[in-house]
Image 1: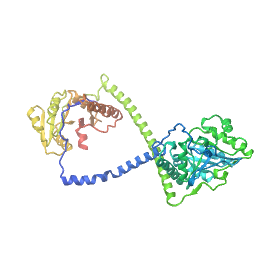
Image 2: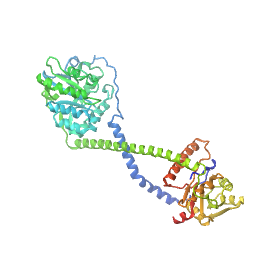
Image 3: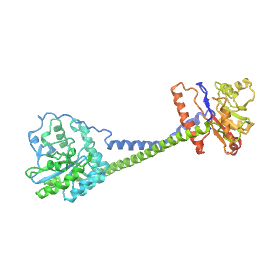
Image 4: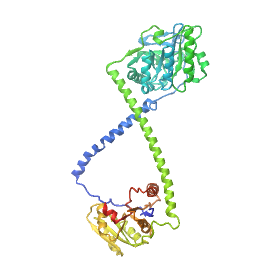
Length: 538
């Protein structure tokens, strides 16, 4: 039942019912035990936060840096590097440039692995008995370790393409070391190997090396890596068409080449289709599609990892996979909850509107005859000296016959005396030692004279029609309790306005819906009515 009430004004309220002092030693003991009650929820919360941060980390949402700066001068780059091949070795203080022998072709794929396109690329390579080099990012290798393991198992080489794909020319040495170590950690966990091959993001031909990228290349060499650029670019990322990708990827005059392609970063169906014609076409012209070390007749770039390094890598992959699955579950859970919340909100609006039309139509009655017999109103009060007079006076204006029982729950501010001094008819004061609001209500119930009991708070005021409207549903013998509609009286402040919205959404509309569904979960303490027989049963 949506009867109308309003909260009293902004007078400050003393501590609530049942407030009792606790000996200091008991409070201290409770303080020491309190954290144990929250230990498991806090651990779960921290674990969830860690999983979300880890997911953001491997999805390049944390620490990612994709800046690309204009090319710098080339005065510091040795001529033999600018005029040399696509393989640059600066290990051990060397400055060596290597090319690929004629009729040997090294296919390289950047930015993967991708769960959609990398398997298709691997299928084409396997069908044509071709090998390639995959320059993987640490983020993608961490997320799709099974694809990295397949690359190695099928005889391909894997190189590093940093972890987050930043422009290393404008990064510190510590950031470069971090990019390398994190990528190796992902590779160790995914395939149980380390690699000595590295390709900087946004790199191009050797003659594009400039004064910004050359120091990075030299530093990469001191960390034990060979830098691999390319000398043939398919430009497949532009999606120029299958025939154009094949034309751009084909070296001229039977020369050897390192061809740049991509197996990630977008729709790569043209790349896959181009490979299926490009590989057999060049094989017929005498080309071998080999790993980089195979083409250079050099030892493998892969080094097996064992012991602690292997377990660290596996632990990393395990945590990343756990974070992925956890956040996937969270996304599904949030989606389900969102659907349920909006469904409930829509149902609430429809049913509350239906309820309002039902009870407001002309001639509507809850039963055959209206309720006219007197009812008892219980007002439990604890230190309500500033509010109780207004509360009692509002009840005295009731349009329905009532008796008023103010149960003073051990107030120390003279609440009971104020009511007694009013000397109003049908108003009784029942005193008890402070025992809490439930005990006060039970005391009031024991002293009530009538079969219908209305309960309200000591800081609430009723409108004249509130009691009359509140008890009318008892004309239906199936009704055991009625929920009223509490409203905020002091809505002139921001907090009051928001509380008013909360009351309307959480109490008024909700309870209209519950009334139609016949599943009222709670009766508000500020304004509720009960059939005495129902209370006595519980």
